[in-house]
Length: 428
Image (cartoon, rainbow, N blue to C red):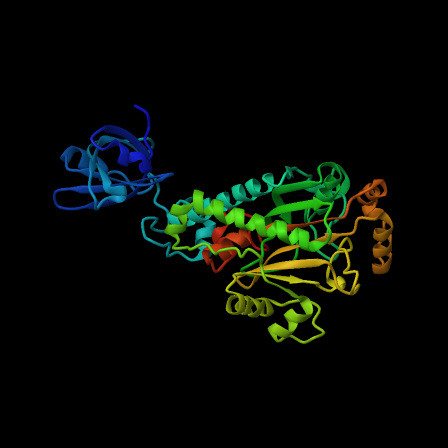
């Protein structure tokens, strides 16, 4: 008999089926035991009245893996409106050692460090796994949206010979006796691949050895990167980003509707045109000093509140960041060279995306590096491609875990990360 997943049970009323999963909970009453079995699709309620079967159930602990063969019976009060009756229950392994918290409770009551220490079991909780399903749907939506715009998916090295982002710390390693680094970004490679495919994207890990210890930073996270050629300026990039976000949220709504319901989340609407403010105006709106070189988290929160109040938008572009705070490959604003054709996208008051137009002329790169007093040699291989003709181009990078955290209202990005890596955590 083929195995049936819990969410398919309603179409089998009256039939005998075989399910398999984990003992989620047992509720023992005087004349009946309710066995709740959890599988990848949800929960199934098994009604046990046979004394012999009841006696066997008493030997099983929660999280023991079992197989149940039973009749599907309609019951509006049961999960999905059905329950399993007249069951045969067979363990598929020894009784499980119970985890240090109750997975059957609506929310995990254990502290976040305890959950992370016991991630392989904590992630089985429906609320934790729901966030990961939403994450998977968001990635699928990212790919689908960009495929529709003729982008090509690429896969670039994660071990590199030089750092990508000026000023950012890197993880160094030994590469057969030579120094190497974990990649902070696929930035250089995705620009080079614009010279091949014009429009490219990548989904992959990036590594930042910055000494952050906050609820929004990880040392390793998943970056959703895109780069496109033949742009007029950064606004073309912003339009593609807007469509990409809309596609991601649409796919989350389609593929993870049940998970959104589990977490009581209503996805936001992406405006047809996301409101945008220049960095100078953003400082004024946020009440920051006019000579502030960057936006602090408090400024971002103030801007998020302003966007919600003035534009009914959960999203806000901040454009024209000072060139001094942007990487050397950033294209300056031709009208105001001290400011960039770069942008950040805030999502509910937190920076989610960084992007902009890049330099595309070899001579401009040499000048930019010279102006910053940075050597050419470490990036010579990257710069060489610009001697052979590159179109005006730009791109963006979305932090996946931060996107999901803001979407579901998680207080800490680690709540939506399966096995987070940060300053203090390298296991499990």
